[in-house]
Image (cartoon, rainbow, N blue to C red):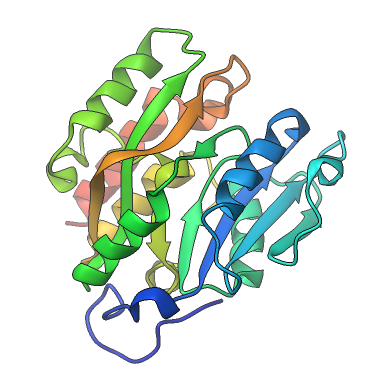
Length: 246
């Protein structure tokens, strides 16, 4: 896993500007119809030294068939173990000092990585930086309201105990901050909200750039709609556990 090296503040110290290697991290399970566009959007923001790590979490639709022949692309496979395990598998092989998250059915918007890298370079305590999302194919209801709420936030830490204040596929993180808190955890809870709470509890800052950085596709099959780990009670249990430790 990549490191910025040295000691310093919890965020891992300053960034060496354009020299910092970025690893895009994209887990996929049966997402071949959308994966090509997601990977293309990440590759479009990669330099020659950056990489896009795709983790196939036990797919049955051969997602590798839609991927281009590009030396910056790394694909690894595992049995179907879930998104957190896939992210940890990808993190173990990623070379970058920065980890840029993206989901297989979403698209990174132009300028995202430059804006997030500049934000991280300007604040050594900042461990994770997100941004606004553009919602397409909206099924209405809670997802639309949630996207509007996150897009309106100006201080993420005051919103942290209301709801997850970052879109998971919109975030770029310092690899060494992930190391310090143990990365993504598998369990009966939302893996992204769990990570934000643990980063904050360890003194890391969370922030977002004030521009759209990801296009999120709302589908009936999206995990946030289908997986019980994202139920309201699971969010509440994480909040209570966080409060008991502060």
